[in-house]
Length: 201
Image (cartoon, rainbow, N blue to C red; front, top):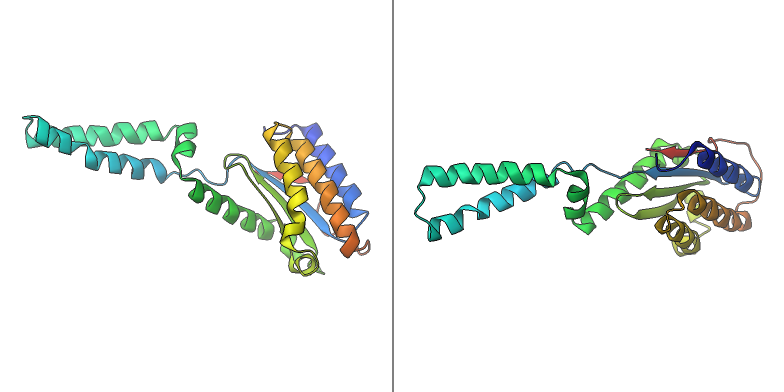
């Protein structure tokens, strides 16, 4: 478990304290990773298996059947090796991981009901550990008042703590910074619409 129950409680308390300063609704999501990237091992293994026979064809006297058998073994071996989770994640191109993490953040924005608040004042704080990715997604009621670049300070705090292994501290600090921003543009009022909690997926 990336964070303890005590950490979850501390984050929930930080959200509750933040929402006393603003009508904005803050939701936190921590993902171990945004995808299993199951398609990466067979793709890479297929590429290696396509290349493997050529040195055998040009530099050995092996027969076609034996070369084809070696090619199949190379594919199976490479696919099994690349299926090891740390290696699979390391071999996935960075742009693919960022795109998948971004998509996961948007999915969580809708799944957790952040987009469904009455005045469209929801904010999602999303972290995906496997991809080393973090994002703050604000609904249109807030995005119209606070430009995306203003969330940078909260993201910097969050990422700095996560790099140090202090995930809960990162969320608490980011929540506090979000509350500071929100209180300027979305004053307190209304009623609680979303649970004060962090979702770990």
